[in-house]
Structure formats: structure tokens, C-alpha cells
Length: 572
Image (cartoon, rainbow, N blue to C red; front, side):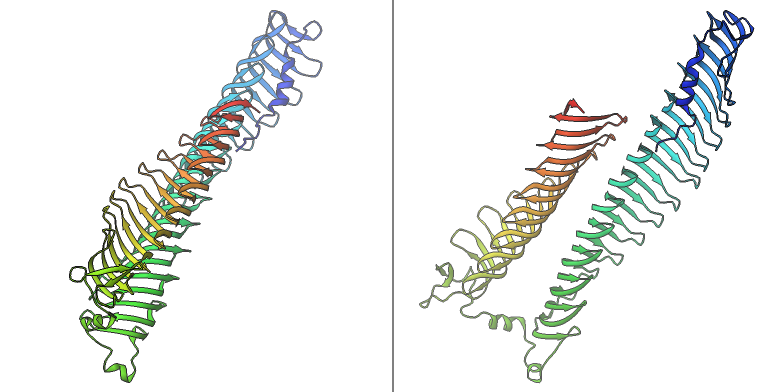
């Protein structure tokens, strides 16, 4: 904040500048040339003190017609050295002067109770000092041209405080704030708001560690609830929003999509008893298509409504019995005719599902015709049913389901290169949800479209680098989050596998760049906030400051102008 001028320093400076005067006409008493005397100026000022060569030099007292009074050192007609200046309204300064101006260390008290002790420069608070406000606030730290600027500590009447970097009187940069209820935030501030990386310990026992924007949780974060719940993932405006993982107090674990603080979209919910649900959620509940793996070994695949099995589905009991049909309130809905025959053993059901010739890769021979796997029989019928370790013409090994001679449904494919895929197939292609493990230990889990990564997914690298977000045509595309092995994190837009568009890159040293990207580098307009408290806002090209910009260094120095290759080449 800008500290208002507690002495009308400009006005007093102009009054004091006339201290070197002719003594020939107004010396009232004593030796006004070289000695002690009393001199009255035509404007009413009266000086009582020491003179040298006709000018006030040494110690003396200068009184003004309005009641203002200075007592202290003079040199060649000017206030120079130590002195006490008392204003007509009662404000009082005691300290150092230079060339008629308050300059150096001093103590200033105003009629309203504001009290400053510290360094001055040219009549302004500048350097280090302590400022006590009438309302009980207290600031100890750095000032720059009458502005609280730099590193310091603010203590409030309610015993709360802030300690860290400040700019224009507001927290800006790294700092710690203690609040009235006992909550504490340590991290980065921008113009008084939580912004960037920080840690918030609330009075209720919750703890958030991650990224903030506009004073709220925004970006990747780690939130521990007072009841023991634990969420790691993406936030938007204090709400869980995006991809994340939540461990509940009942030890259930959810991994998947959140919208407005609720499970929404695709996810996996693992129960404490060993059960697991994979599928769609709406408003925090299982809703839509999904698969429920019960703790007793039963498996249901089909429709859910408001957390209840309702609609069409298939239930495979732990003993192998199968029901396919309609469900209501979690129970099969049977006709009189169905009641006598719908419950069958899994072995019998498998025989019914194998339309045509059942085959296993170990036991049956086949030929490929028109891209279909056909039984080596006179009719060359396309294979339908389950196969195990079926050797394909390209050397791959497939285990799973075939429909009309094509890979269909869930299956597993091992490639000669050492890569493997396990998930859904449609018409012989990876299509739907699945997991692909590369021979170099990279792992992708998410959506596929016609054999390529497309939609939401997660790609993990052996060095713990990871990407979570949208894919298109096997590449990062859309919104996503990229975690580097060194702890750096990028959140924003991607195109053709690169940082492209708008994003926020938080470096391992907690420096933060927010702005435009092209080809993986800051490019365009952006703001770079350094971990040392520096800040640059302007234009970037290929990762460097290039173009017009404003650089504010950690000590408060500001440079504005044209930058080339990170250097200021022309001041504005």
C-alpha cells in the first residue's frame, strides 16, 4: 500500500530551502555572522542558533509562523544532520536530515497515532522500518518510495499475520498467512490472492497442497479431509473437477472423472470388501452402463440407475449360473417360462454363445480369408467363440472372443515386439477402453478409437513422467496435464502431442509461467513468476523473453521495454 505523506514534506522542503539568508537587516540579537544570534526573516520565520559566515551552521531552532518548529543541526543554511521537526498539527519527526529533507534513520509520529521508525530517503519511507497503524496493525519490513514493497511481516490486531513478499502493500510472491480461525496458507500470492503453488492447513484439520488461482483450488492438487478422506487430482474453483483419485473413510477407492465435486463420467470404484465397479457415474452414483464385480465372485454387466441395477443386463453368479435379461431393484425380472430355464451353468452358456465352430489356438487350425479367421474346414466358416493363445499371421498371440472371425469384445493381444494390449475390440481393432503396455515399459490406459489412442486416457513413462487428458489420433490433443520426472507440471492445451495454446507450467523450483505456448515452449503473451519473487509480463518467443514486456525484480526494481533473448535491449 502507498503510505500517505505524514509530513507535508514537499511544502516543508520549500519552506526550509530559504535558510541561507542575508543577515544585514534582520539580526535581532547576538552575532548573526559568526557566533550565536537570533534572526527574523521577513516572512516571519525566526532562527535562534549558531551562525558561520552569515549562514545558520551548527545547532539551532527554527520556528515558523504556523507553529512548525525544527530543532537540531544546520550546515550552510540547511537542515543537515540530526534534528526534531514538530508540525503545527502536533506531528513529530526525530531523526536524520540531509539537504533540508528527511533522509536516513528516523522516528515519525502523526496526530492520528500512526508511528513509523526506520529508514527514509528524500522524505519517503524507503529501506527497512516498522510502521504501527492507529487500528493496531503493525508492519515490519521493507519500503520503497512510501510503498510497502519487498519482504516483511504484517501483524493484525486480532493476532493474525502475514510474512513474506509484498508489492504495493499486498502479499505478492512467496509468503505465509495465518488467519483468525487458525488456518494457515504457505505459498505463492499474486496481488493478495493465493495464486500458484501453495499449502493450506485449515482449522478443521483439512490440508490442501497444490495449485491455486484466484484464491481457490485450481489445477492439480492433494486434499486431505478432516475425516480421513484423501483426494489427489484436478480442481476447478475449489471443487474436484477432472481426473482424480479419492480414498473414502470406509476405505473405498474411486479413480476417474469428477464434475463439480461429484463422481461424473467414467470411473472405477473399488470397495473395501473387494468388490469393484467399472463404468459410468452421474451425480456421484452409478448410472448408465457399467460392470460390477461383487466380492463373492459374481459379475454383473449392464444398466444402473441411481446406484441400483435397473434395466437390461447380464449376471454371472459365482457358481457359474447366468441370467441375461431385465433387472429391477437389483433383482432379475423373470417370466414364468424363464424361471424354469434361465439359470444355467457357465459351461452350458459358453456352448450356446459359441455360434459356429468353437476354437482354441492350441487345438484348432485355421486360415485367414478376407481378414477373417476361419476354421480349416470344408466350409471355411468364420470362427465364433472364445479362443486361447491363438497365433495370428503377423506373429501376434490373441486370447479372447471372436465374432465372425474378427476380434470382438474383451481380449488380450501380445505382439512380437513385446508390446501388449488388453481391453475392448470392435471389428478386429482396439476400440473402447483398454490398457496398452509398450516393450519399453510405457503404459497407456484409456480410450481407443479404430486402433488408436483417442478420448480420455493416462500415459505413464518409466521415469515417472505422466500425461493425463485427451488424445486424438494417438497424440496428446485437447485439455490435459503433463507431469515431468523432476516435479514440473504443465496444465493446459495440447495439439499434435505438444503444448499448444494456453497453459500453466509450474517448474520444479516453483517458478510459474502462465500464458501461450507453441511447440512445447512459452510463445506469445504470458506471465513468468519466479521462485525468487521476480515477475515478467509480456511477450515470449521459443521459450525466451522476446518483445515488449515489464520485468519486476525481487528487490522491487521495475524495467519496462523491449527484450531480446531474455535481455532488456531498449527501455521505454
